[in-house]
Length: 256
Image 1 (cartoon, rainbow, N blue to C red):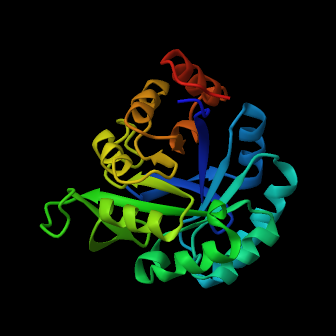
Image 2: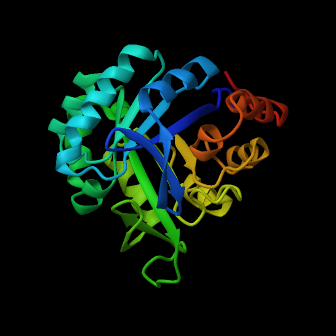
């Protein structure tokens, strides 16, 4: 492995504020997104991801404003997701200052939108946000099911099969988030990471469950090209990004 592992703080934004919960529930305020993004930029984050967790039509203007203000303040790649339904939404986000757009629910509902976006803007601008949970549904032979609407709605679709299809349709990266592990601080779902890694060649971002710096190297060993977290950065020590990078480096993986 020669490409440096990316460390990515995730800002879940609701009505212009950063929030964080456990298993996508019990959200609590974590601060102003622009100020947090500036702090993480200065602390050595490799990228920033914004996810509009409600993405209601009334909230979209807030999101575009937050993106524009953040893009003026930080100088690392910015990925924005939540409410992306068509190529026009991606166009507007890019014009507001985003470097990449993340899509989830709309792609599950109509997979062709992946082709439409990547054919217009290129694969490098589109990240598939795949929120998956463990299941015994026989229709999901991998044991992982795709969920939508912030993890609230099951789809009966096998997560590994969906990752493979999305990669074939052109997504540039996959943000793989474990709904079961989200916010628990008990570590990443390594089995899920390994299963998706075996199915796709596109870069894989692991998300969900990080509680301490030592949780990150196992996710990379399982196949992640980047690691994303929220709680550990929002509510942890100010040097947490440096601590995470040190843990990754000490485990023998390259970091910036």
